[in-house]
Amino acid sequence: MGTDNVGRDVLSRVVWGARTSLEIMAIGVLIALAIGFPLGLLSGYVAGKLDRVLVLIMDSVYAFPGLLLAALIAAVIGKGVFNIGIAITVIYIPLYFRVTRNQTLSVREEPYVEAARALGARPLTVMFSYIAHSSIIAIPVIFSLSSADAILTAAGLSYLGLGLEVDTPGDWGRDLSDAQQFIGVGIWWTSLFPGLMIILLTIGLSFLGEGLNDIINPILRKERT
Amino acid sequence: MAPGETLGVVGETGSGKSTLAKAILGVLPSNATVKGELVFRETLLTQMNDETLRKLRGKDIALIFQDPMTRLNPLMTIEDHFVEEIQAHESVSAEEARSRALEALVSMGIHESRIKNYPHEFSGGMRQRIMIALALVLNPSLLVADEPTTSLDVIVEAQILEILQDLRRVYKMSLLLITHNLGIVAEVCDRVVVLYAGKVAELGPVREIFHRPLHPYTQGLLASIIHLETKELHSIDGSPPDMVTPPSGCRFHPRCPYMQSICVKTVPPLVEFSPGHFAACHFGEKFL
Image 1 (cartoon, rainbow over the protein chains, first blue to last red):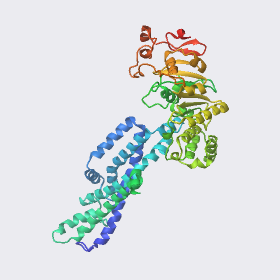
Image 2: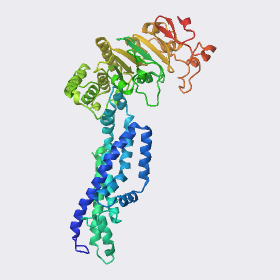
Image 3: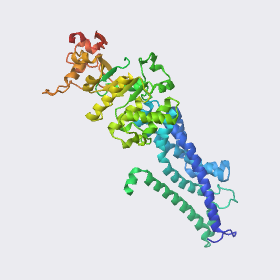
Image 4: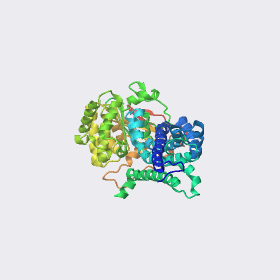
């Protein structure tokens, strides 16, 4: 893939960039899931004031354009892989919260939940065995799709220079922004390959999400056979 | 209710039968309030806190519902259902819970190899039997059955009723049977309560109610039963009242053939017109 303007190998930068991107994405999305899912569950099940407060907070965060919010947070807490991961977490918590809460609200009304309560099931059992167990069905698809989105957001942050430390090995967004100035003189490889990688990873994760949806959703599953 | 007694609760749709069942166990929606007294073995159910009431459910008072098709968790095997219920009330090992589950299932006439099946692998009648088994596995002293056979065909219905009666005899369990089928009531119940628009219209021993109904609504119900010799269908005029703004005085007055002005003005009290036989009608004596 050639070398960049200071002689660094583009291929190895791209490969290391994959690692960095995946790290950021994993931190971001996994922590968002770990926070958003239980909160959504609690909020949907308990309802009342707690629910109203949480929905208000989550909707406010959700209303912010993702990149802007991440940029704000990154500017405040500084650079580094972990910090960017956290910035991305904050953007995706409302998504997991909302999806889980919707599932919880609908499962909560199911007759078998009422029957379980009538036979004396403990509230925690109802929440986990029944509601969480049913709600988790929606998560894998959202997980892959938000991962795809997280890659784009992370790349966007790096492109803006808010992402990682300058000496982090392999940072697709930063490479893209560095390479911009050379496109005019005909040096296409320093910008093409990082950009291509971002696209590939994003599309790959999106396809993963769609594929999971096809398998999990019983209606779509029937259409395949 | 006395131990071992079967009390039938009869009424039209919307008369409050299911609400009564759920109120007993405290599983009404959170915006419902319960007024009045529900006494179980000298304790006031309405004043219990949540955890005490939860322990009661399934263990002392059990509730089975009308639609067995949707009452079991599709993600759990039958064994899981039993184990969860047993362990929610008693601290026993999973092994013991599983063996009790097997016993309960077999006593319902379901083969033991099916214990690890999921609910969707059973028919409606079998699911209802599973539900009954779940309700009875902890030997409650009161079983509240909310229209347990309404959605089942008559043959399965007969089987289920037979099971319920056997269990009553063997375990001395009281049964509160909610139904709109007077035939079942005549067959199975010791006493009957007739509900109309959320109020008790009549209450008494089954024979008394059938042979000498004191409330015009009960009379209307009995007259609408179709026999082999029925030539003409008889129904009660009018339609069930709006529960948001129910009729004043006696709630049945718009449909009552014997209505007088007092019926519109005053709510009739529940009076014992003959031993054990109560009716809420201003003119109950006339029908004695």
